[in-house]
Amino acid sequence: MNQITITHILFVSTALFFIGMYGLFTRRNMITMLMSVELILNSVNINFVAFNKYLYPQNLDGIFFTIFIITIAAAEAAVAISIIINLYRSHQSIDVDDASEMKY
Image 1 (cartoon, one colour):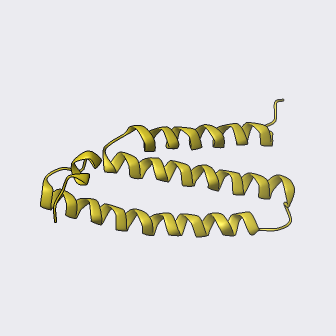
Image 2 (tube, helix red, strand yellow; image 1 turned 60 degrees about the vertical axis):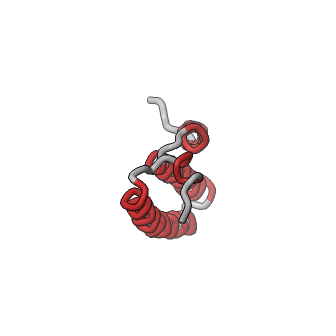
């Protein structure tokens, strides 16, 4: 039977990271950019769990870091979505190009 090694997990994590970076740099929609940041954070979480499992299986340090990052990401998403909703209500657009031209 084939076993999933740390190389496979790191490949998936790297792919998620670069998909997130691509979405962050190429998209102009704030919601899409927020989802790209979440993909990047999830790739970091996968790395923490993978290295914890393969390097220090007796410790739970990687799991604790992952739970902390998930908590911070949820708070960040809530704040970012509220900011995006306020921008949309006041300017009827969530594009980054339109937001840079806004006068307050």
